[in-house]
Image 1 (spheres, rainbow over the protein chains, first blue to last red):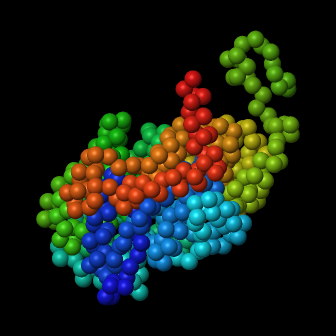
Image 2 (image 1 turned 120 degrees about the horizontal axis):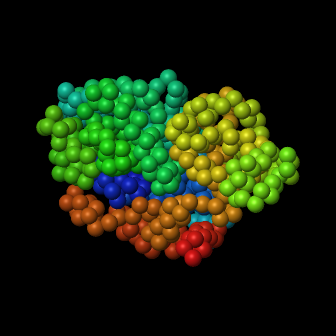
Length: 301
Length: 195
């Protein structure tokens, strides 16, 4: 432990480091101000993608996710991550292998080939749940870290799917009477969170559907965008880079395919938190976003 | 009704084909395999349709009906289920699973059926591309030059501290995938398709 910092192995996944590196940079810098130190998980791979990869062979999905877990076990450190898809692979495989001897033995048989063994000695957390957890950070600490309040902005929360669902295997409670904890974290930045129709609906990207039938997946995204626009949101925020990609690049694709334009900036919560803590758009690589963030930035800068 | 009509016209054969289910179509082992892979008691489904009603991919957006797949699982209609392209329209959002009054996981039934489909070479090519990318780079979505330049501007290393910076971990990943002959099968299916 360095001082009072809580340390975690930072599992990056693919889309954050390789498409939206601002999410990665922001996660490291913003967490530091909240007493959370993110350390590199050297040699980690794709989680691997629960839908696009797990659909092919769950046994390999278990084994490759377990390999990532063992890297953190070797550091003797809990994992934290910033993507719902990664959460499904890394958290869920950890959970399943801890409780299912048959599957764990099968995985360890394969891992033995690469001199590894899954022991089940660590836990996995989404960074957003650590922020909300009073014992680790808590909403008030997030509020206290804000130096540039996002006053006057209306922000639509997108929870995504794999952090909260399936609810009986998770610990976030009901997914039907919509949860409001993400809104607390948004409001703590000085912004106004807004409610919209079908808030808990999927972005449309998952399960390999974005790759299998882009038009179909965009039609789901478009439904969400219609509902978000209806309540006059200035931006969408989420805690899943894949949802971010679907909403952000998806808006360009929707304009091409369906001829509908929204120009709704899409920001990962860590990017939003970075802005509220005084980071510049350049420090967040917001220029890599497909949808121009300027209209939103003009409201707060 | 005759199962084959012999009208001598492929279009008519298809249009008027006998779509009744016969016990000879049924493979009871299919249900057992689905239950094992999905880790859910798929046989308990009583066809209420809450799953299809909760599904963002369902009609009117498409013809994909998850309840139908649940039924085909229970009836052991392996060929019907695995050859239906709608199998690949599930976004795995788990809304059906959260709402199922029988406490089942229809999403995981779909995942199990996709696993079984891959075993008989039925798989959309985007899934195979992901397999190849992970095998070769460790990442399903690998880094690129534009992103490397952006990372450096942010004060991050050009490549993240994953397999991208530590390629010595890639052979281990390949060994794990080879153990299940996954890459081999993906390559073979893609090669046969492009013949």
